[in-house]
Image 1: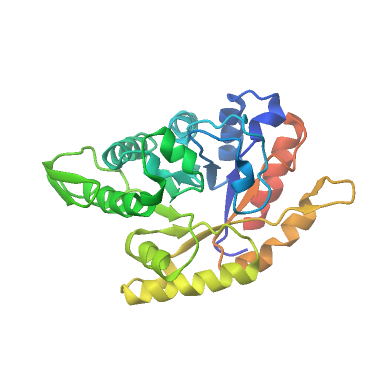
Image 2 (image 1 turned 60 degrees about the vertical axis):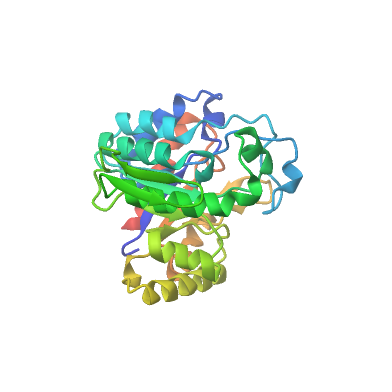
Length: 299
């Protein structure tokens, strides 16, 4: 499929290898070798037992599921790979102070030779904000202030930032990211008019929460309108959507049927198709055949 990129979702991948987190590094190395374009890690700092509040259906894991801190994990993965881009999908970015996140991301981008994509969003759990001493009701203000801070600290030194939650007066935050203009920001948010404007002003990509083609198509149209209003080229927009996981009658994921669903998602506007690894493999021996099949979609 022309211009299609393949992303590998790592949520729960360690469970296929006995729960060993170091297996995530070995999986990343294998994905790098066969030509997967991007490897994606998820984020939760803490988890409450109120997973019934999850707004997108049934929460897939129990509260004590291990969530590895993605900036730390991506640093290890980047050091073990050569070409594959490391990404979050998504980082609950307001949980990190804006200036600290700017420094962490710039450092990782430098050390990975410009291979970082930062997927960001505000999350859905008030308990995560409370655990860090933040007001969940102010998450969007924190998010907006953070966007302004990231873009400024990645491009200007000395920097000036004056927002409700961030005040920076003539400070230096070096190094800048290796990628010109800063680390690409992918937004894991609903494509509302306001969010579309955020993406048009600050973003490189969109990470839709749904993988229905109509949802993707309508969201892409909304964001492209915002791009046009900001004078941006709509062809620059990247969209990372999950492949639709199809299941057999026995409850096992059917890779071929899932692959067959990609064309409609791609046609709707997705530039990157993310395949979660865990549903499709049962052992280490399944890894390379699975990776080769999904990478073949690019031919």
